Image (cartoon, rainbow, N blue to C red):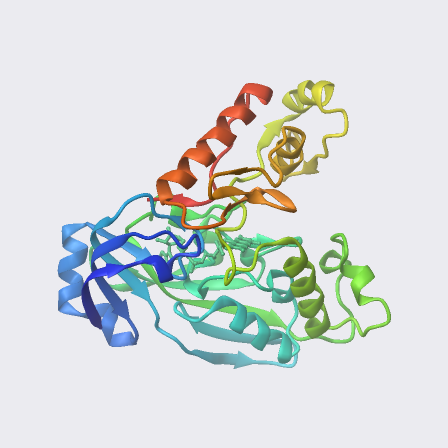
Length: 340
Ligand SMILES: Cc1cc2nc3c(=O)[nH]c(=O)nc-3n(C[C@H](O)[C@H](O)[C@H](O)COP(=O)(O)OP(=O)(O)OC[C@H]3O[C@@H](n4cnc5c(N)ncnc54)[C@H](O)[C@@H]3O)c2cc1C
């Protein structure tokens, strides 16, 4: 394990905000998880686990220890005619793994192409995009219980996955480190389920091309590149807010104000999900800037650091959006980003 002191986190968070941590411990290999110094850090309970920093907004210096997850590697545990089961270490870059899976002709993860960050963070908020969620492919999560120091395995069902939610954001928050994730992925057999192609733009982009995992990966990458800020160029954490899930009666109230407000079904027939971006756009929050913070040119949900904004500048912009949304809809927007 590598330990450094008084370290800038600017290059370790995709909002690119300048903050420091007292101590940075980098986990690079299996043995690091049982390092004595790290056990001491866990006991003091003044730590933060950091993957790619693509879902974290730092609003001030971190006064404890940041534990950076960089244990790399993956191994195939089982291969049959139909499936591959693969264990991927938490510190692997998510998109590299997705690309690997599509090259191998495995189905599903292509819809989660180009999401920044590490494999170990994907179960935390059950990452999702283009109709797919990590829970659809994840078999088990290997964790280290920070109190006992023991390794444990959680089965998919035990992770209590929901919409951008899991046990790791609730009961197990700050109590475990994800060490590796085990995925069970189906082999491509000449046909792709319609559900992977149903989002706007995918079929059009695939016209004239073979419909296979690799080509879907490239189509989704292209669509995302055209809509989202590139992390190498602009600071952001993707979608700032979750889409509100509301009772049908609330939806009926809202369509009187926004007659074309879309809705999506949820698992509960009395609850629908509405796109926060639609209402924010009506309220003038697309491509709106205040100083060096703003929303993305093409997307009101993506708060962007256009320059050298501080974490507090970004937070106060986010708070303004929430207030405006509340005053027009009487609904609270919930942040998808972890604010520290
Ligand atoms: C341009 C852009 C587009 C995005 N698009 C999407 C999208 O389409 N869908 C989506 O769901 N998200 C999206 N995101 C958000 C983000 O990329 C994902 O949530 C990603 O999984 C975060 O990974 P990370 O390694 O950067 O996590 P971090 O930001 O480092 O951490 C996020 C949270 O997970 C915890 N954590 C991280 N690693 C571990 C671990 N090993 N063990 C325990 N806890 C851990 C952290 O403490 C923190 O609470 C996007 C972000 C950006 C910048």
